[in-house]
Amino acid sequence: MNRKSFLKGFTRNLIIVGFVSLFTDLGSQMVFPLIPLYLVTIGASAWVIGLVEGAAETTASLLKVFSGYWSDKIKKRKPFVLTGYSLSTIAKPMFAFATSWPFILFVRVFERVGKGIRTAPRDAIIAESVDSSIRGKAYGFHRAMDGIGSISGAVLAFLLLPLLGFTKIFLIAVVPSAIAVLCILFLKEKNKTGEKKIKKTTSFKVSLKALPRNLKLFILVSTVFTFGHFGYAFILLKARNIGLGNDTAILLYVLFYIVYTLFIIPSGILSDKIGRKPVLIIGYMLFAVTAISLIFTSQFYAILVVFVIYGVFYAMIDGVQRAFVADLSPPELKATALGTFHTAIGLVALPGGLVAGIMWDKISPEATFLFALTLTICSLLLFMFVRNNKQ
Image (cartoon, rainbow, N blue to C red; front, side, top):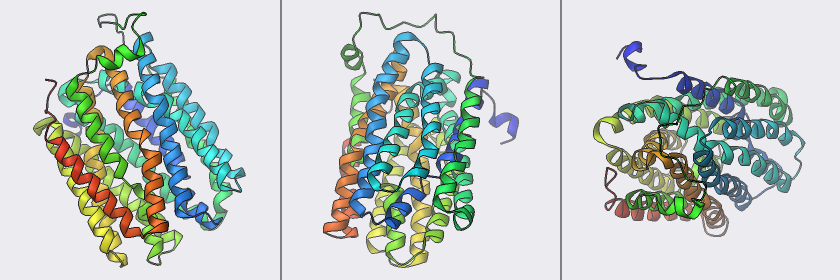
């Protein structure tokens, strides 16, 4: 596939949103992979790490459905995107002044408020910027740009940590994030005069009820799965648990994002051709393989393979889930649907993170991964009842 053919159907807004995510994640991933390591350095336990990551995602998720609803109601996306990315940019240097885990928790939550405001309207911009026949590829492109930024940020964190330490890296991370905010100014709002609008008298509750049953069922499947999804923080803890140092853990994190970035666009294209559901099922099965592997892993090379498998898994679900939600949602409720999806899976992030951390501390690391495997199997069984279309 040549470049001209690959970019066919891509729009100015999609390209801009891609670069916004690239620069934002460049700054974010100079910070976020270091947070679990920094928490361990100041004496925090695994349940604290689970609390910090879970509370951050839950806070963001509480806002996503409301920002999505209001974005649909006023037919505006850009103000939410600009505000959200600006708040996250302001939060980055605040980590430099954190000397205890409660303050790190506060800053992490504050940063995620920005994510909660921007995510659903931004994802709606992507859905509305391209034809539905290439929606999977479009989300794949956006997530790939996100991945490129993540790789760059994590590599910079790895290179700069021995030279500058945690604090100075947290301060420098604000620069690429500020560039991302400037890029947002060039976004153009889509003219939505031809679309059915949410009436001013239409309540938030009524809008949620208007979402199709098949979409609600898929959101339930995703929520059950996310409750057991332990995330990269616990894989990094596993790497440290078998004796690997901070520098090696960061390199493994970079490997994960390289694999993710390489597979995210092909996964989106594949979902355009064979449907979203088969791709997501394969992704869930790969996560099950990840969980099983981590139960028995005790060698560096085994952890290396786990990070590769986890990268492929994440590539197969990250963009495709969003495309599936956009496929199943009514045009006038696209941001509401995306916000509901993000909120539902985020609300279980806090209890899921706490359960994973408590199991790690009180029982064993293997218990955390066994719990994840059990819920993944439940999700796959529920997925059998989800149709691969809007009906």
